[in-house]
Length: 65
Image 1: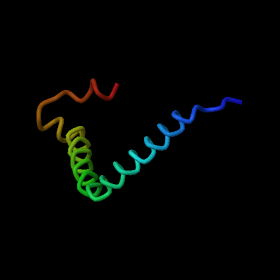
Image 2: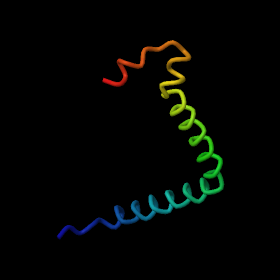
Image 3: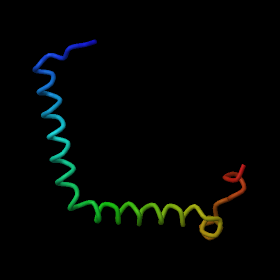
Image 4: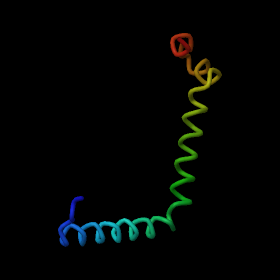
């Protein structure tokens, strides 16, 4: 059994509090960030479709191998 140094324990507690503070701060921004990621992901998925690839003149046969 490993006994932790009290200063290491304090570091872990402070790290935990820091993470909790960051998460608490980001919670207000999370819906906006999630919306941006959703829009980007949807745009990527649409760009990868065969129809769009044909419209921009890319050969889709290589991508399907």
